Amino acid sequence: MYDRLINRRALVAAFALFVAATVPSFAADPAPAAAPPTKTLQWLRAEDVEPGQLLPPPAAAASPEQQADLAALRDVIRTRTPERYAQAKWDDEHEDASIFAATIGDGFNLSALPATAELLKLVQHEQSVAANMAKRYFLRPRPWAVDTTIVACDFKLGKPPLTSYPSGHATLGYSVGFVLAALIPEKAQAIQARAKDYAYSREVCGAHYHSDTEASHALGVAVATRLLTLPALQSRIEAARRELRTARLTG
Image (cartoon, rainbow, N blue to C red; front, side, top):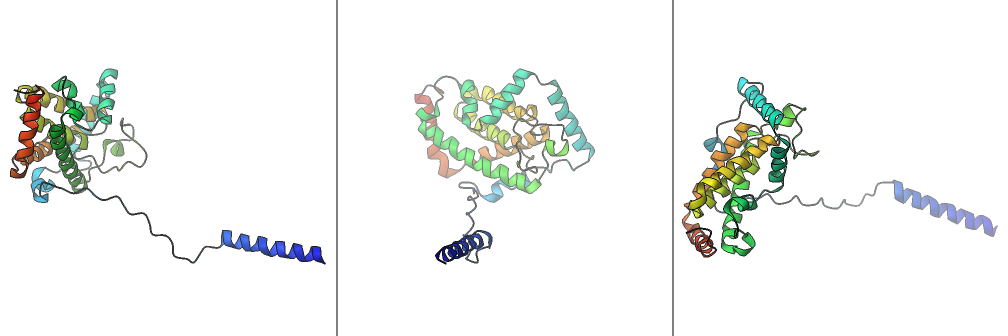
């Protein structure tokens, strides 16, 4: 009898564990994790970078302009060399002011140039917000979402497909490049050439159409121009100039 009692208690305990494991709890579910905060403009106003005012709309789907854009991109991909593709992949992985280090030369080490680094950091922030505003406004499909034979060097599963216009990388290159050209006028032409080549990497990569990077040119210059003329930033701009002169990177 004692054995039967033990067995009965074991069965009851096992059944209780089974129910606890399989029946949904009616307790309140834990609150979902908070979404990461959306970046907002800190220096510019939204109307300063209104996408519909600054940029023309991209080519409509299936339009002759869209077909020409796609054909041009296919040609870039078909004729790219392994060396140029390797550079495009390097550029894809470096979305910051370090892309200009080789152009400006020895001494352009932002860890040793805090005033310049601070100024460029805020430029990068503002251009990133502006580029994302434009992407959400235009919602242009990426080339690989239109033509599945295109495999972009930055493609990964889950990547948002409606983010082609403008290019974020290219907007960074043009905005930061414009500011650096103003700070180091002796190397303005070389800096601007590097910004253009960096933008072209997005096409070599298969990530963007040429019209995407052209829109980035317009947006990047607009962001940089507005920032350079803001009265509230003049002291920071002058501090960066002094620092670059001290480092003998400009006269």
